Image 1 (tube, helix red, strand yellow):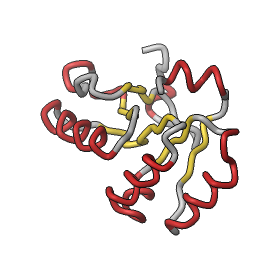
Image 2: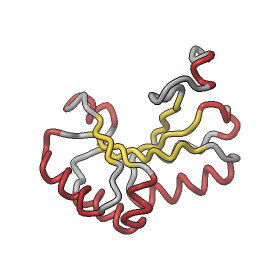
Image 3: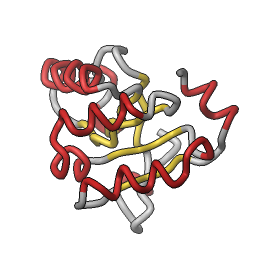
Image 4: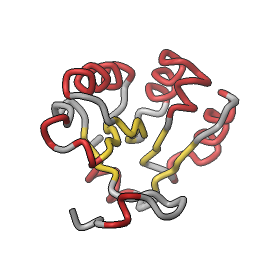
Length: 130
């Protein structure tokens, strides 16, 4: 499923950051087809492991999964991370915008660029138009 198709079906992106693996299954099971886009962060991989996250994605194959990796490394490391995330089953990845286009990962996944954060003033907030 593409992000465009998922967004047409639902304008909500569900963000799950839980420590207990069963919470991911319960939340997605309870919401069923109401949610089409799911953002998982490092807590998912740290709680369930890569294989557990892969299974969650495979069993919910009607959804578009974004990894909130906030990637910000050099290009060859970003490429390795992106390949691993694609292997797990993710459709998209979030990267930091400050690293610039020369360090962006190859388009193996859809790329979402982080330009601001919700917790309060950050360096991003000085010039989000960039």
